[in-house]
Length: 138
Image 1: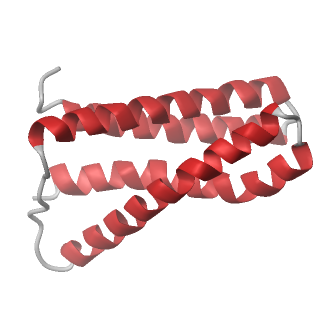
Image 2 (image 1 turned 135 degrees about the vertical axis):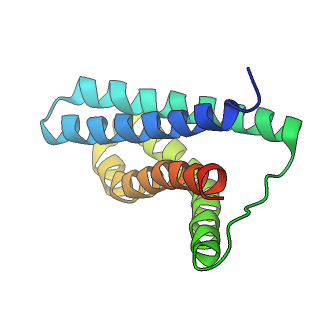
């Protein structure tokens, strides 16, 4: 893949994950459990693909420095720091939430998903925002 297209591909994976998460949320609200499970599994798969692609890209190019100045600079770093911290925190939450669902421990699954879903959605959406700010706000 062309290195210049890779960040956009990664942002598209994050956006896809966010759309799958939102769809999965709508399906569980509509009591369509099998569709909910399918879309949440899709979000997990896309997020895993994103992570592998992100690591591969940065192994090739290293760090990319934000060039913005003025008011946008502290805004960028605020989004980046919260995104990065929550991206680490969300992994065990996702795995535990999935494990509870697979074990059919639904009351615990629902209780944890109330935290996992919005944090995971934030990580996916903020990943797209980081991309837009880093590569399109110069």
